[in-house]
Length: 311
Image 1 (cartoon, rainbow, N blue to C red):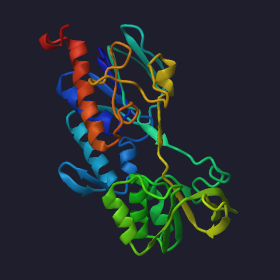
Image 2: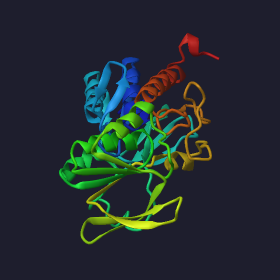
Image 3: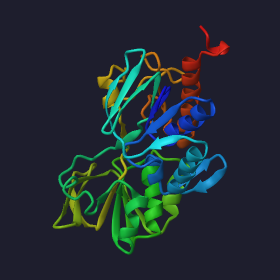
Image 4: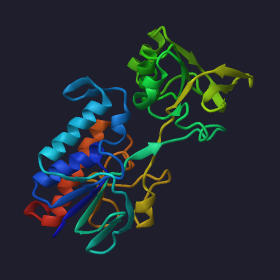
């Protein structure tokens, strides 16, 4: 693209929202996504309380956002991974596996990736009974026995979703209280097809060609036992996709999240960030959308320098 003004890296809720607002503001923009547009939001079995939708599947909401972005003219390049960045110069360079983009500003919305347990068998059986996405892989376990690991909103929603598919659904949590919303906690307790295993961790995932069982340990007693299962759904949080920007000089916090101010500025001039990759403490679709909009409008101000943006 000639005279490119803004490159947005990532096409989740934050990146798509930023793309919509930047294009509507008149910026020549391209959105780069290493996978398919939609982000981890598309993996959520259900998104509740997003304004305008009392309840909607993650994939449906993601598809609506993608369609909206395309309808207003956002250039969306899927399956185009960024491999290097030069962000310190006035003219910034974004190199992908397919092209090199020169731009006036960069907006990072690379999101996060699923955190692993780090137990024996996890990598060996990934895709063979070990999953990080209930809505993606749940239908493969219809009528079978599944185990969910975690204690937050994602773990609770995944468990409730799987309870309507599997023959038996258990959730293990290393503590004796969930971190999820109270409504979800009550939903777990009131669902007949769900058994909660408190103060419990997985020691090992076993099988032959596919998962057959897990070894569990009771953290209070130290006792171990084997539990026959067909599927293990790991929902223990996410880590930010921030390594590439760290290498380019963007400042991160101790957990690897991009540090931004209230207007989504990073430490580098002309570089903005939004969504789950930032140090904003609330990781929700709604907050990602708001950050994406703010970052896009700040990028517009930085590039076009309207009267209200002058310092």
